[in-house]
Amino acid sequence: MSSKKAKALQKIAEEILHCRLCRKGGTGKAVPGEGSADARVVFIGEAPGREEAKTGRPFVGRSGKLLRQTIRVMGLDEDDVFITSPVHYLPLRGTPSTAMIHHGRQHLFEQLSIIKPDMIVLLGNSACVALLDGKVEITKEHGTLVKKDGRTYFITVHPAYAVRFTKGKEMLLSDFAKLKRLIAPS
Image (cartoon, rainbow, N blue to C red; front, side, top):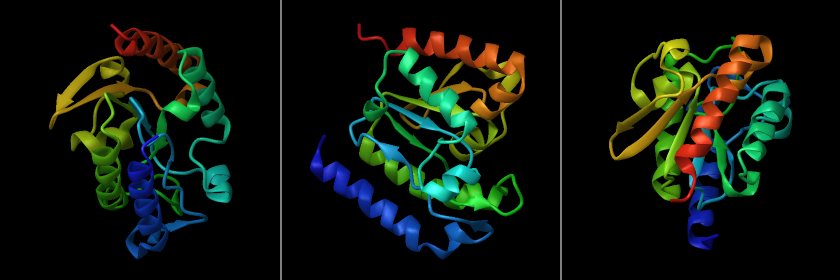
């Protein structure tokens, strides 16, 4: 891993930790994201949940276990991807506000410009709002690619939806099988 890139990501993590606007409307530890500064694939969720707010790590609760397991099934190592969210603190109201998403994405864009991934996986609507500038009907658009601003995005359901609903789990697993084919080395 490039130590220069890793240091740049660490600097952003420090900015998130000290950012009053990131913390506004949120609680717990900051969750700036984790993984490789050289990741080919970045996974972007919604916001930290209770477990994440306790540990400062993204996707460590029930939906995180499903996400991490599915990443491994794809043949990727967790150390070779980057996992984050546009919102870096547990929202006090459960779902993050649009203002929280729009502020947090500033840090997210900085992270993406350092990592320069081949593929950005948008896990649910908040990720789509942050990076595609609008809501997406996930149940209709899941499994699709979007190219925007020189980046390639793959839309899928949030793992929390997959944990709650059998249909959601089927969508997630189907999408990840497609994603595996898309990122396979040529």
